[in-house]
Length: 155
Picture (cartoon, rainbow, N blue to C red):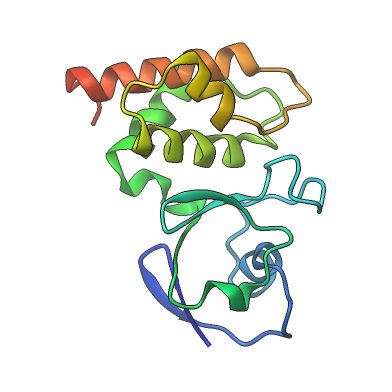
């Protein structure tokens, strides 16, 4: 089967039902997407499927035929992704960093849909769990990235 991952066509062969997370990590060596809970609840495994933030730890890879999959490895290929990465650093968001790839992917999908997200938009989109509790920094980084994208200072 062929999948479109990070703008490249990947030929994959795996047992039916294998979750996309494990296909990415084990078969394609794309290890930026993390395993957290294994129940699509924590958000560590968030990728984009056709631009939508999607938790992939329980998503069978074969359900994605014909879809565009984007992982954290390709985040810097978009203006939104670069703005978020800069904002994440400026706001010193990560502590342990484990959940950050999922957080960034959820934030990128949010900013792609809402150029100026409200507090309610952020709250609804950012349901990822962070044991370090950096939620106020995440919110500040999203606001900083949105502002940079609006005023043209984002790369």
